[in-house]
Image 1 (cartoon, rainbow, N blue to C red):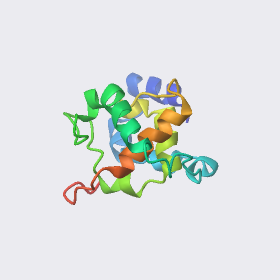
Image 2: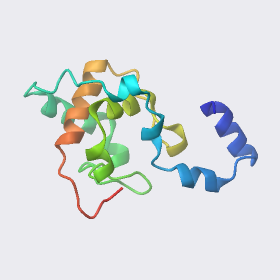
Image 3: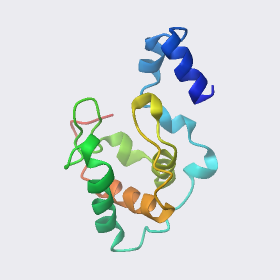
Image 4: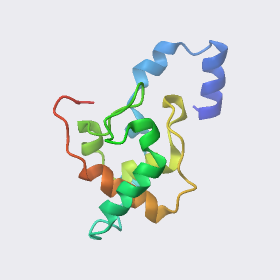
Length: 132
């Protein structure tokens, strides 16, 4: 279903809130196969994690916290779901966002910077208490 139409139907009360809760965290299923299998061109660049951390602090920390452990309703990025996601899946999410869950699209960031962010996200230590 078209994202704008879905939001309109949700606001109108046609789509029950339970549908949103049921699909929470299912963004990975929407990633097209060609995006899912993309390799990170920054994978071997030793400066990519540092650059990604700087970008995270500038663009992401206000929602996900300085330590990426989440704030309020914004999720921790130390979860197994983030660590299991492919580089291509994370890059797709950064590019397209997930408006239903409050994640903005970062398509205005140059692609190389999105890949640097992906390197940083995969460098975070997984928290065994954070299974989602």
